[in-house]
Image (cartoon, rainbow, N blue to C red; front, side, top):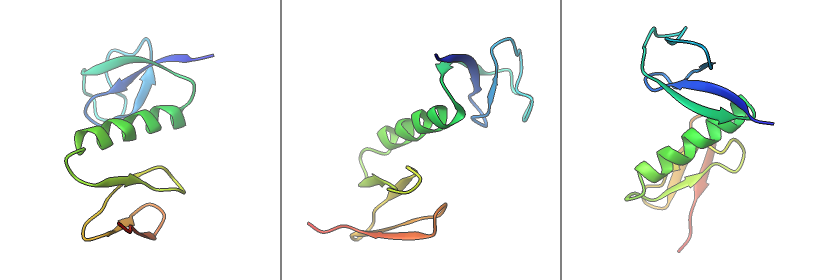
Length: 88
């Protein structure tokens, strides 16, 4: 069952649905949403980032699902310390 929470538009932290400002950065710019977990919210944020950079070649890390920009056929995940190569 989804949990209704708000997400800070500035720092992307999840806040309670009744919050009026972010506990981390103090921003009042909160976006309403329904999430089953913090992991789902993070995945949604990563998908939005991939769409934002759709003009560039980006893949998702197979270990942590972070967006990885690919340049000259190779990319690096800064979260997992993994290097990725693409072949055409």
